[in-house]
Image 1 (cartoon, rainbow, N blue to C red):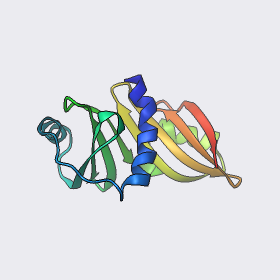
Image 2 (image 1 turned 30 degrees about the vertical axis):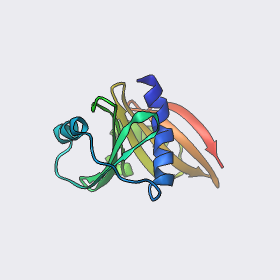
Image 3 (image 1 turned 120 degrees about the horizontal axis):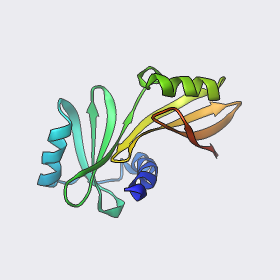
Image 4 (image 1 turned 90 degrees about the vertical axis):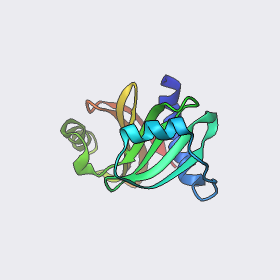
Length: 147
């Protein structure tokens, strides 16, 4: 599962870049059943195959673009959804305010799997862009300059 946690941001970038080139596929019945257990009232569900054998469901859930990943057994292994700053847990929002005082937040993603929840932000600070990863407790886990 740790490999998946590390692979999830890569999958998100690959997904963003290749969405238009990817062919949709039929959902595996096991993954579709698992999907329905966790996600209701969804719109625009599209299924695709990802590297590593993962099946991805891309959809809108509660007005959020959401991605859910399923393994070859149809089990949910993780999800990513876009958030706004006001939807972050208070402790995470306060940590961002404290650590990145004048930064402009370009994008926020919530990454969830069986190891917990983390938040990935794209921020701009003094005309430099950074990818920042925070724990659900607001701890800055990684800050990396983006070109």
